[in-house]
Length: 153
Image 1 (cartoon, rainbow, N blue to C red):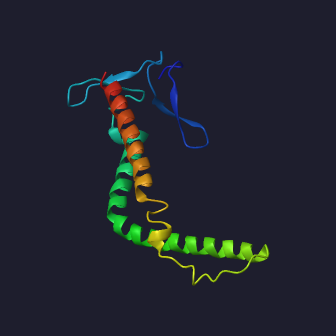
Image 2: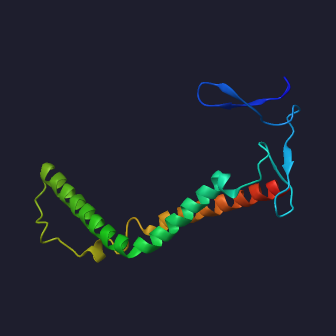
């Protein structure tokens, strides 16, 4: 190992390992994997898709989409309960404000209406989260493809 060869730092103490990182001029090494295409990496290792953060982002987004598809029926029931409680608390707060303003009280039981009349659709539908996960998967997949194509050159 010559004095001009960069060395890899290991550990948190900043000790240098005796293994050189690359050539002295800082160029990338070329490895020829089994497929026969040239992969260029800084460390000289062949390109592995699992080393890319875009791969893990894509995987996370796709697993999230599958999970949302599996929980969709239970989500609809639970979200309907949460939104019904929210609408009830909102109506009670309006009644409190009426009483504090000195207006005549309204019996909440008399003015009760079904949930479908008040809010026929969900306030927070699952498709909004699914759209975000799909866009994240699309973006990560695009970046992973570009990174992989760049590594093939």
